[in-house]
Image (cartoon, rainbow, N blue to C red; front, side, top):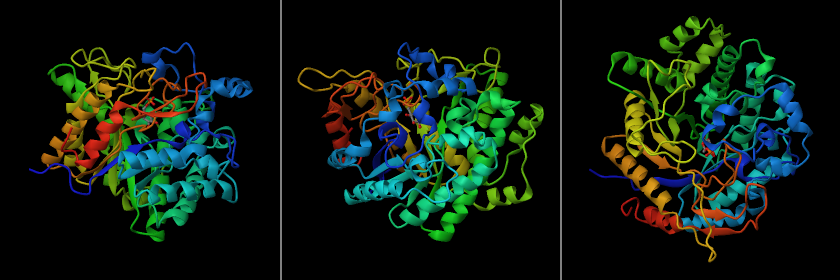
Length: 480
Ligand code: BG6
């Protein structure tokens, strides 16, 4: 049985808001990640739960802070100015594809502007040309949390149906401009993450709605319709473009073989993951989701035309990020979709993310059996506290071990029959972390000398994993 196909896309993935910086340059408007505050007394393992929501009062308070260093994503790693050198390094690494996002707030600074910002488009013209010039296939995410802040404060985020039109207008501008250069598009990053966050994913301020949970599902309905409409527009412009649906895969295992554990874990996986891909790939709301709405007395406004669009304009490929698996116990974890246990059988990073390569093979099989469409691993990797030695080396054998085992798992999944066509490890050069807003959580093959407080030379140094991944790519996954 053969492993990776000859044209397998070995890549790397980043997001504009975590690397570009230049938050107020080039006509860019303020966006949601620009108010992501770094807590110097961070509780690393608990951050996601602490900060998944935003209130109007907290937002107001954050907007009064004048010190940009408290908002690491405003500066990122200055990729806005250094992308040519960074992409040159990625070319040297041998990447076949490079995933990044277009920052919505560079193109429509307020989200509701009449005309797009030409300066923002010119930046992406050159960025995409540079990626293509280095022989890498660009994979472009259109919404990686970069919601123009004005769409939060003036419209209430994705709960408002008007967001559909703003998003589709923005997509159309990008499709028209880049269709001849960009084949693979991910419309929304990790569309399922609304069960952990309402601000990043949907731009909903928790105190601005009567029922936050219901508002999140209304917001997601609008995202589904927006994705289908954007797919329709893309097909009219250039049918060779491929539209992907992406989720964050946090597959849950049942703690015991007790039928209640098994079934309620399955239900948790349905509503936290498969609901999203079922709608975007199968083209309809599944019965279990409609029942979930009924059981919770959620009233979601949707019309016939919405359902027709959802049915007719489904995704061409499925992408998912894979970092860890979760554990669920019927007795202990009954406080909602994000109530889970630690798996005592797995090691975890200091951020509490379990390390489970076999889980990746399991998920690939699970999704491919269910949908039978091409699969992409849009993110994977180990966030770690790297040490730069005095001679400017980083000996990150722990990262090599992590990636090696996950690549082996992908190879096995391919032998199981899964059509996997791309693998994009997260942050091939260090960038600001999404959930903890710190530089210290590093994923890269390239060390970027910037620290949590914004100090550092900004110099780039190849880690040991650089040469290792270079060899993996050169041998198409044969030498691990
Ligand atoms: C995914 C996001 O959830 O995980 C990325 O799409 C993010 O934006 C990645 O960076 C890893 O998370 P973190 O918090 O370690 O950066």
